Length: 150
Image (cartoon, rainbow, N blue to C red; front, side, top):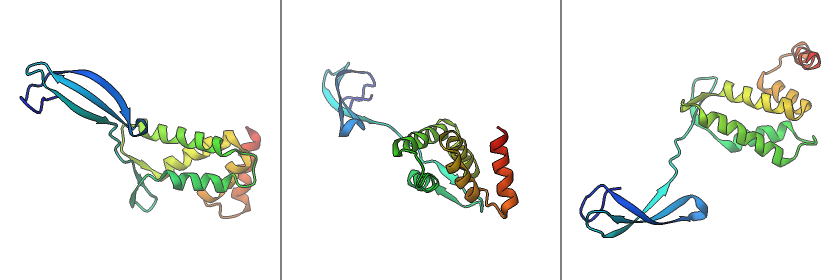
C-alpha cells in the first residue's frame, strides 16, 4: 500500500478490524520509510454476472428471480425455505466460480433443475414443465418416464 505522505510503497499493518457487518476491513498501517500512520479500508470486489437470455438480450444476474422461480416450483411441497436458499447459494457459487462473467439462462435453468431433482421430484417436474415449455402431454410424460427409469 502506497503511503499517502511520502509515496513509499511498503507499509506494515498495525491493526485490523471488520466494519459494516464484516463487509469491509479497516486497517491501520505504518509507513516503513517515514513512520507515519494512515488508515485503509479493504472490501471484496464483486463483478456482476451477466445472464444471456434465449433471445440474446443480456441482464444482470438476479438472485430474487431465481428464488421466486424455485418458490413457485416448491409451492405446497414439503420443502423448507432454508433448503431453497442453500440450493440458490450453491447455484450462485457455481456461477461465481466460473471464469466467465457471462452465463446463459439455459445453464442456470439446468443448474436449478439438477438441484430440484435432488430436493423434490414434483417441484422438479413443475419447474421443468415451465422451463422446457412442454407443448403437450406426451412431452410431459417423457420427462416423467425419465424420472421413473432413474
